[in-house]
Length: 308
Image (tube, rainbow, N blue to C red; front, side, top):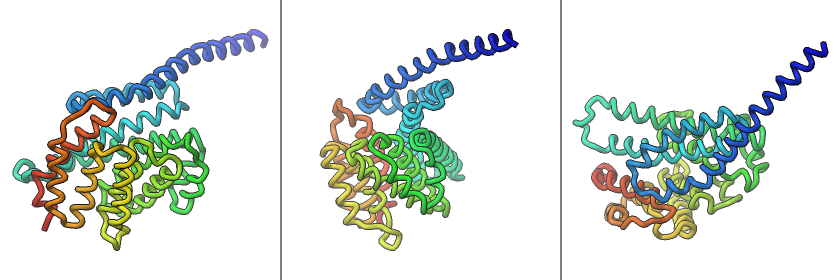
């Protein structure tokens, strides 16, 4: 019996010794990645960034296996999924949707890209939800029912902003890509509530990203579906105030979701042309400006599709 106890204690000790250094290494690497993620955001070489993000997502997923309770690591994965899905997969989908149908007569490319973009946003949602569950248990149950959203959100504080934002970002992006689905449309309310809570806690988070989302939310919908052009413009002004006049995603969203809804073709074209003509700069929004420029070019080529 004593021998068995000794062996059991030895095994437990070995496990602890073996796992602790591994966990420490993962935690240190997570901090390095978190601090260094701005290197992506300063890079306007879209081809280079697009090729590097998927490998880094898989690397972080491998790290998370060795430290499953690391909510910061799960949040990073959700962030990379959201950025990759929006900046690259969704951009390719937008191009396929608006390019000449002769290049894709059976729609197979569009369906393939839509499936890919859904998977990446769904993955981002799962990881962000895992991070929230680690920080404040009850996230999965709360976000599954409309009536339980606000009580859960009220329990969160500034320390929870990052996973909450990336949950809302991935969810909102997924909803916008599936507006033909009743299930997806019913989840739009959740994304809106999440982003409004972000405004309560930290409205400047991620260049005013909650304002950017709500700009699109209110600007893209007709009034009978909750759209409100005045509210959309208020959020546009706030994004500009927070991120600066050079933040081109604000201009892109305002043109795409507000000027198009208002059928202001001249202003739509002029805004998108300014984005395309904007000179790249070495700053923390270089990547987002490059994405905005690529999207603006796609919309300009298809301008007749947006106006009656």
